[in-house]
Amino acid sequence: MNALVKQLNETIERENPHVYSMLSALGKAIYFPKEGILSQSAEAGKKATKYNATIGIATEGGQPMHLKSLQDPLSAFAPKDLYPYAPPAGKPELRSAWRDKMQEENPALQGKSFGNPIVTNALTHGLSILADLFLDTGDRVILPDKNWENYELTFGIRRGAEMVYYPLYNNDGKFNAAGLRDAILAQKDKGKALVVLNFPNNPTGYTPGTAEGKEIVAAIREGAEAGINIVVATDDAYFGLFFEDSMRESLFGQLADLHPRVLAVKVDGATKEEYVWGFRVGFITYAGRSEAILNALEQKTMGIIRATISSGPHPSQTFVLRALKSADFAAQKTEKYNIMKGRANKVKDLLDSGRFSDAWGYYPFNSGYFMCLKLKTVHAEQLRTHLLNEYAVGTIALGETDLRIAFSCIEEENIEELFELIYKGVKDLEQTA
Image (cartoon, rainbow, N blue to C red; front, side, top):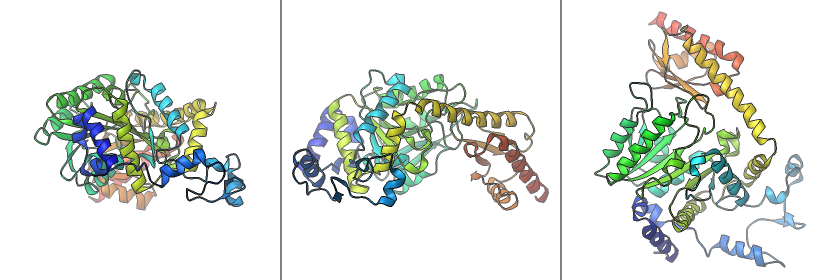
C-alpha cells in the first residue's frame, strides 16, 4: 500500500472508525500524490524565481500564452486568472468566499466543524465524487420516490449501489420523515447507508418546514443510534429559492455534528443559485469533528479529482469569484429571486383557482425551479408527446401520472397560457380515449 494512502486511512480510522468503515474500496485506496508533478510544480512556483520549467502550460512575456481573439472579449480579466490550470481543489479565494457565503446563509453552522468547500465541475461531479468515495456494489442509497433521475446513473449504474425508495409525501402532504426513518432502519443488516436529501426537491419543488426538518434529523439520529453508519448528502442545488414558509437553511448545519456514525456532506454550487448553469462550478464540503479527518477527506477528494478531470475550469471559477465579491451581487440576486417567486406564486394561484381541477391535482411545492402535476384522466407520456406535437409545448413526463413543469423558464405573463394549453391537451386526449 502506498505510504500516503496508509497514512490517510490511519488518520481517518483513528479520528472516527465509523467514517473509515463508510469508505468504499476505492475510497480507501485513493490519495492525492504529494510527490508528483503537481506538488513539484507547486514547490517550484514558490522557489523557482529564475526559470520555472515544470507544469505544462506555455508562457510568453511573463504571463500565460494566449490568443488575442480569446483575450479581447475577456479583457476585464487578467490572463493569470483565465488560462493556467486551476488547483485540483479549486481557486483558494473562491473556496474561502463560498465558505463565507455558506456561513452567512446557514446560521446553524455557527460553531460547527466543517471543511473548506472543494470546487467540483458542478453538482453532478460532486455527487459522483461522493459515490466513488463511499459506495461499493450492493451498498444502499436511500431516496424519496420522487427524485432526480441522474441519481440512478451516478450511484446505481456507475457504482453498483442499490436504490431504496420511500414516499416523499405522507398522507398530510408533508415530508414523509417516518418513511425515511423506516428505510434507514431497514439497513441494520448492512450497517451502512447513503441518504440523499434534495431540497428544494427536483422534480416537485418541495422544501420541508422547520418542524419537518427536525423530524428528518431525528430519523437520521435514530438510525445512527441503531448502529448504522450513515453518509448524509444534502444536495442543495436549488438552495435559496424558498418562496413560502419552509426551512431557509440547509440541513447540513444540523447534521454536521449529529452523531459519530453520521458523516454530513454538502453538495451545492453556483450552477442554479447564481444562474450560471454552463459555468459548471459546484462545491463539496465535509463536516467532521477534527481538522485531521477533514484534511484526510479533502486529500482523498483531491485524489478523485486528479484521477478523473485533473482540475476544474479556471475561467468560470474566476467569473463566479468576481460576482461573489461584487457590491451589486446581493441586490442582483434579490431581483432574480423576486422574478422566480412571482412565477411560482402565479402557478399556485392558477392551480388553486379550480379551473383545472377536473384534469389534475398537484404535489405540494414552495421552492426551487419546478412543480409536478398529478394527472387524473390521461397518461403523462401521452400528454407530453401530444403537447409537443400539437402545441409546441415541452414538459417532462415522470411515470404514469406525473408531469413536471419548469416554471423557472416561463415568463410570468405566459404562465396562464401554458397551463391552458396543457389543459387543452388533456381534453384532446380525453375525447380520443
